[in-house]
Image 1 (tube, rainbow, N blue to C red):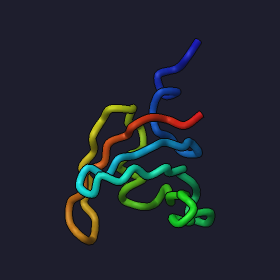
Image 2: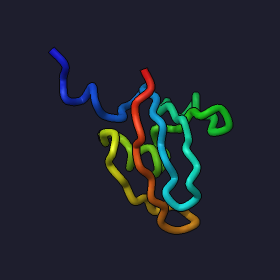
Image 3: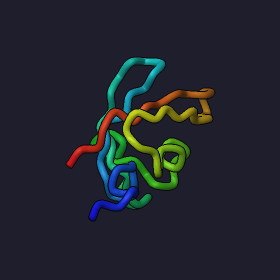
Length: 80
């Protein structure tokens, strides 16, 4: 039996995320702050972007306030 949270971006999971402003697709894994390494796609769970994306399913768009202003991201899909 699949739980609903199996279909959302959660801690420890990897997803493809579209930056709707730049058009770039990022492959990000949400990790603990000590493991974070944006260059290798490891997004700190403490970051504003990760906090905003947590719990969202593929197809959902999230607006995030960043130091450079609002950004829009869409969860494209979860990576197995």
